[in-house]
Length: 163
Image 1 (cartoon, helix red, strand yellow):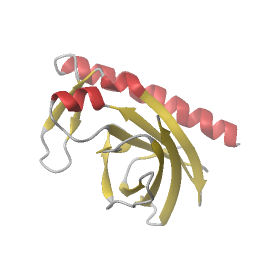
Image 2 (spheres, rainbow, N blue to C red):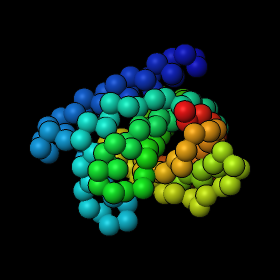
Image 3 (cartoon, rainbow, N blue to C red):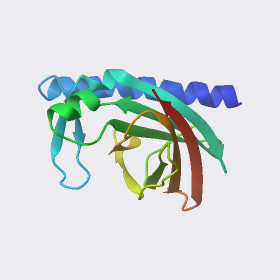
Image 4 (spheres, one colour):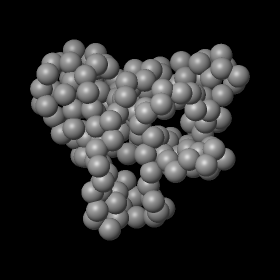
């Protein structure tokens, strides 16, 4: 069953990527994202090509798949401090349906062991996401707190080594 869920989550991601490409073509052939604080559009160009899956985890009937997209080149040009776009896809294990309602936030523990403040993850194109800053090489830990459509609180944990 776990392989089926992974396949379904991967298929959901594959389905979302063409939608993102279509949206990009509709907006001057560039990927766009919504800035969480000011609600203004930020143009990331072709930065979506640097995406990696950092893990998947199942908690209390919900499967989560976490991705990081390296957007350093695009954000540096705009003099922004964020280095990565974090995406989380959630899926109900019983039905196989994606979950894109509720709230989610991430706390990042950096390589020195310092935990940052919670960053709200916003629903965008079927996933929860936010731009985050990873200061330099090393092992990062991401703690994702959620209260999704069913109202249950869940916590997901992922690790990523930045080279």
